[in-house]
Length: 234
Image 1 (cartoon, one colour):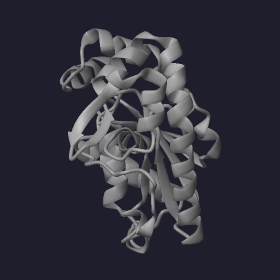
Image 2 (tube, one colour):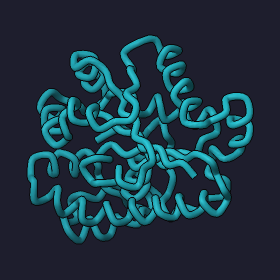
Image 3 (cartoon, rainbow, N blue to C red):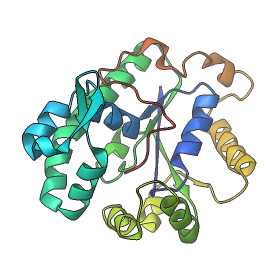
């Protein structure tokens, strides 16, 4: 099984590229979506986070269920390094466990290709488990425009996020493939498919061989899935 790591700066097009993989029935483990599940209704991290940060970070979801106020928690951890370290100590092991189960499931099922979509791939050392790494790339002004168009984003918050990420130039220098996402989307897709063919993915046979695996072919994650269109990069 070939493991492809997918990463890049905030608003650099990771979600779009992730959806391209999924459209070709290549299973994708999305770390952001796992985190949103952990923080949402019935999320496995809710009790631990409230114990660490206090009840003020709870939000009423309804039906007597609570989750985590991601906006309030995000504002805290981007301003407070110690709080961020505490949050990471709670979330990272849970995300890693979920990812390990995903990989084991697909190894067992002889899935030929899988993708790990991890914003902090290099920063957390997860690139070491990947056979290849793709970095999504866009001009700085395009990234800024995309990011600031997101609900709840501000210039100060964006600056804090970028400060906590490895510089784009370093990510690019460590990539096996750099995908441009500030060009027509059809061109980005063509770049991706050409590269996949180079590493042995058969465009005529491979896409069909992977068909049906895009929903993880029965992979049972412990996290509660969220709508991918509601998941946002932190």
